Length: 409
View (cartoon, one colour):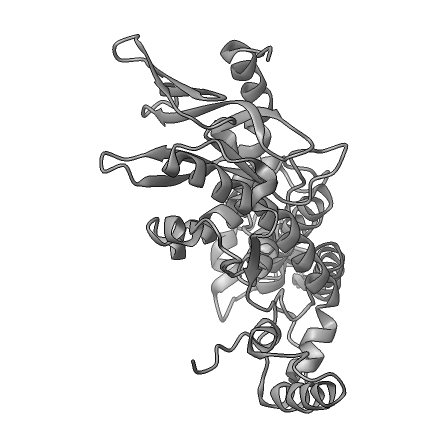
């Protein structure tokens, strides 16, 4: 097989690295949008920088519902490999990284005790050439360590049956061979397709636009609130010989004294009409509606609480788009996790298994929405009637897949 080489992959990573970092900044609420506006000076807008976590909510709302359970029909005992690698953290980290930047990568290696180790690496440190048929890489490149300035100090180049480590400290290349027919770097991809084989991020361009739109609205509202709290006042008819007035004293004083001049003329007091805050509230709600439509959330999820509390069934119905997105994510991410299991089993047993041997091993997920007492009663009645028509059609495994409750042994 002809390989592109590590220099090609370094260039490819540099091309996509900033895009991945930008989405991580959106998720961490540290991204500073470009200042846009024609009325508020930049130095004033800088003082009222707003922070909004809608993109974070859009990712977490789906990531928190994607709970991986186990592999069924585990003929190769791959569940033991994941059980030895802190599964509570591993699965959540891999899923969250894939939702933020469209894909995450799992670096598979052997420890000193010959146990298989699984390490999740974010996509801004990894790239590779993907096989569109299997979803595995034909070659890969990863930055395993960086210094305080972001410069790579330890790199790895992955090919079939071999991993090369490049250390900046000693400028040496260390090669480790294995009996696996694919690189020990496995992508876990969210929503891949023929155009985007490395998937699509949960933080879409439209989602970033609506959050930016809302942040600008909040900044304008903050600036307007200053004038709303302290309305601008004016005085006309003051003699040119009068002593200049302290503007701050005129703002906060409870009593001001104005005397007439020698001709008996006296000043006239007035106040400018203050701007209303209502348009900003409506504008923010419009942005929330656009963002919720893009991500499958509801206005309740973004802080616009409705008057009447919803039941579990009503919440599930309102999150239908989120449920469909979750089912799609389970299929695509489950395929990546199965590839991780395949590569890990080959490395553990030092045996080049064939990919089709894992076809019967299937990933199992917990239900996206937990069943409440009412739903359990409805499901029980339905299961009883179905089993009366087809004896044994719904067993305890099927019930666990539907309800998420593990029954007694």
